[in-house]
Image (tube, rainbow, N blue to C red):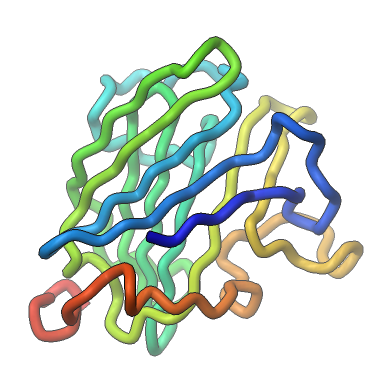
Length: 190
């Protein structure tokens, strides 16, 4: 099991207590469990897609995103919404989506009015070959109040706007003891 905590804005400002997002990654035979424990802002409100369903452009809503990066800039992006929607993308090269209809099992629960939990389960072969880096983000708010938070942020004043596909800012993470087996031999996805 690997645990991560988002403690800063996308550009390195620290977050106040109570605004941190916890992310846990666990492996099991043939699959991966991604758990989120995050603040619940309800801003923007739920997309017009049912809970447990895929939602295109989920990044425009309140969401927690996890990125798993492998060799040759191949990466898996999983977006989870507190209202129960998800989006899973396989990318090869920065923002180059090669598959956008990957299904996962996803459920959410409200811990209390200010926090939510989500659990996503997906097959191991969704992970890119040579998995070695990771980053995660939390987004919420509407209009000028939109907030962007990052596990591994960019340096202060280096960029004008957030961009979660800056692969250079992903961090090395050893998932070998968490996710066992190989993704390369099993997957025709990549």
